[in-house]
Length: 184
Image (cartoon, rainbow, N blue to C red; front, side, top):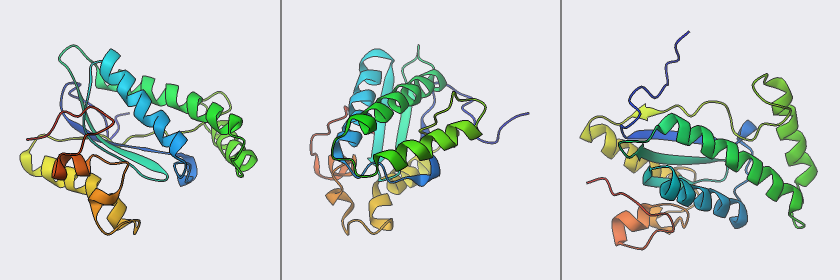
């Protein structure tokens, strides 16, 4: 059975969203967001990943990604999600100031037990809903969506004010902690 959302052209630009199970607001702590940044940096350096835009929200991450000619975007995403799932689970367990620790781990264990593709733990929702960005109009629309997401959520009035986004890099030339390949 085919899926509506699938990466068919592995080298094409794609918009993807990674969502924490049950839309849990895990990324309210900078140390958890930093794991995402560090993992993306690793994939850039070691797995031919290109990050064109990003926004780390409280419960999900929006990305515009591609891979270099020899890469496979589906494999990079699989590896990224697997690694960050384990890293974020461990960071949650080890965080001495995480007041929601038992509840967070219980929710993720519960989600994992409901999904036969997991071994008793699930951090990310299964699907990424990849959308291939094959026209300039679609690229512009998704880039705007990624950058305006914090405003739409009511967190900030100016999208450049959201620290964990590529918006200020695009609009103001501010250095990004994630090396970007800009969409022209």
